[in-house]
Length: 356
Image (cartoon, rainbow, N blue to C red; front, side, top):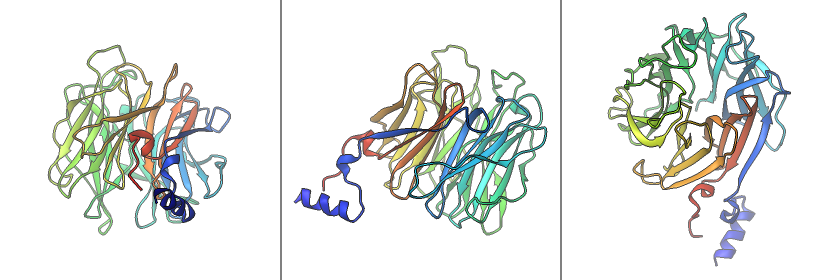
């Protein structure tokens, strides 16, 4: 009977669980593509099913020639379009683009605009597209506060509002963030079209780049990158904060048991309610890149699997689940010149599909 049901599911377009354990990884862009330096990249699925990637590239992290590039992979096709510039401020560097399609079909692009020598001189700008990321509006300032940055994707709250992770970076050292570096969120009401800020999330060494999920109407949790420097340490841990009032007020961040080498993480809720965390499983190196899954609402993460590893760096993971249920993770490697794309089912991590 199980074989018959499995055959029937395949016929109607539902993937067979027996084929769900592979992790397919592909090189999307390398140094031969526009913007030799490529670092934080983001991905979204558009309303028509296309996938869209945004990244920033140029001569280097602090190059004033950096711009935000966009590329599309159309439904049914294997190749990505040639990246083209979608945001570029003359004589100022860009960074950390976040591309995201809202439930109403509008595509948002948030990105960092650097006004000085470090990211502590940055502000956050934005653009919108109402034609599926084919064309973009003029840019607008989302936040004028010096040191404000963006990195992670928004979520839609149960009340219909959007919650966008933000952070405030301080310090004049390019190799260290000050202890006053902290995270927060901006809320957007689609009805009033007004953005408002939450309180700041503090921690002893500072923190940045929170990634958030909502578990109930009132209860939200966020995992955060630790602040500080990149020197060898035995105290490098990922941080965690929570909200008990629907995401308006957040606790100070506390250490978790997950290691963190001062590197970005991602954290999403899957459609079945499971939680997926992507992080570098090391206190000092951006390798390996590991995926962990919680099936009990953040109490435990017993299911873990490396999706990239070895003598390299695998940084700035960005994860989404597409409408077919598959999980997509993009990240950068090869001295920040290459963008990789990993695709897999949840069962590639937890290893036990349900009985048919």
